[in-house]
Image 1 (cartoon, protein in one colour):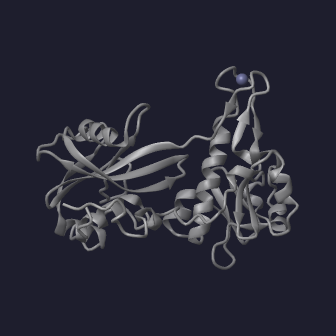
Image 2 (image 1 turned 30 degrees about the vertical axis):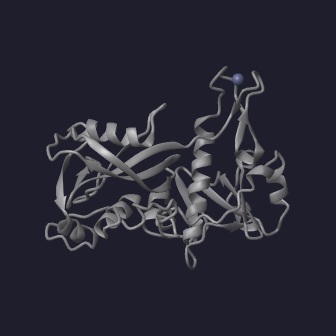
Length: 313
Ligand SMILES: [Zn+2]
């Protein structure tokens, strides 16, 4: 049997997921402490602003979250919390919390929670990717103001990609939390489940945090066993998705169940069962007679499901 290493589609599956449209050139090798100052001196600069878990969006035409610096100034950016994301063509892209009272927003500017911006597609795909980068990084700063080693207040460096401790010199770098999301399949059926917080009729893939010292594949097997008591054999990586709630990376896999019998962990899952291909197809295209559905298009779970339906796994 012949095997070719790159005998896969030229366009990666990750290209199609929500938050994947980030075109910002991060220039990670050129970050310096004055990069924000330089960016603010560039009249092409654009700024994303957030407030209380919401993105500020100019809704006067198509949704636009990249404010020029004059418009951004009216929304009261917080100077010492401003971070540099990189260059989008000739535009330096910055992000910052806004200190404006939400009741004082200009009429055309709306504060919209991140999930709604994503699920309703309120801004262009490349801005959605920038939002994921900005929100993940700003959330990390919010949650890591103090040194984990000595407890002193830390200082932002490198345009927001590092924090240093003035007391003990510890360096702290932004974190990304890996989450395995797995579509468990067995022949022509797959196991989908729903958590208690899911919307009505929604069924999705299993998921769980990858733990320290664990491979992706072992995390898939462990989480599946814990949540369903199903043993999984082979695991195939499919795609990844930035998930800025607050700073995760979803790692999507197909997983091959080794038996039919399962027992749901009722602390984690409200319901779950095997679904045949034909039924899953109706859930994906929203024609299921009982209104059951799979997650929305941009979600990596939907891509895992579609790929399996199309015979890609
Ligand atoms: Zn310290």
